[in-house]
Length: 355
Image (tube, rainbow, N blue to C red; front, side):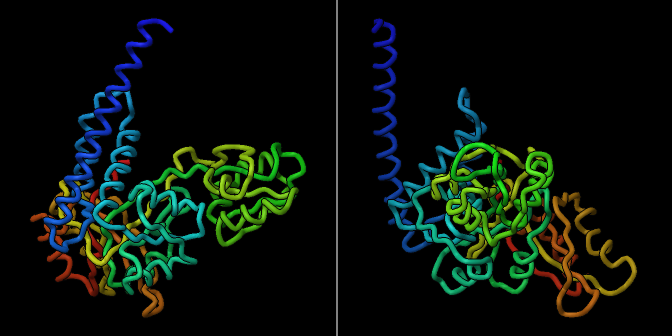
């Protein structure tokens, strides 16, 4: 071993020792913060978002911003766990993209429990069995998740965070190769996201929709002539081989998840606000509802309509706009919308996802 290599390794050892010391110091301060809060909530989404943004902006490289965010979120997760356990539910079973969204946002040092459906996720937080729920709300390829939108209208829960998760679909089976695949399992959304790839490479294979990609993985593990779509995590859980990686038709395919809790987040400096409103049944009513946002120069990133379910051919309009509900401009615009709307509900203000 050269003297130069020995010196470099010695420097790395010294840096590792310093990192360990600083991590221990950070965890100790986190404990002090927990005691100083005197029962206040430990998880503060706006504070964690501010830390992530500051470090991403200060990052000198060569590590990417996404890598820095992943590392700091794991550190915050571990330090939060020193104070108390955070209980989170997600749309299960284990191995789904919803579980990946939980880990991306909260880190691995949480009590994350899978629920059978989106309804159960809402109920777990509403009844106090969990503090937060992570549920899908829209996919960039396939659009909105209707059940999430319907439930959030009636629920008392607030949106306190969002997670943007790139969706990379893997084709997996018991052994390698595409030969002999007669059936492909997958959640309906996954099958839709990969239909062009499947038509090109497995045109004769039957496509079977299942309740989750994890269920597809369970079946594929027992059927040598079957394959399934899903995450790399699911492949590991069910002992499957990834035959083809990233078979989604759109390379930028992304699912947006909501983090739901009993309260929304305080201002973080770069926020979004979600709301739902009903228009009066008169010409130009929707335009009049949105006009206060335009007049205030507030950008919308989302406008989605859903049947109101209270009357045929009446609709609710879901809006995601920039800013926090406590911001002066947005607060004034929301007050004007409320005066014009047949129905208005603020679903929550929360830090905008960084990636």
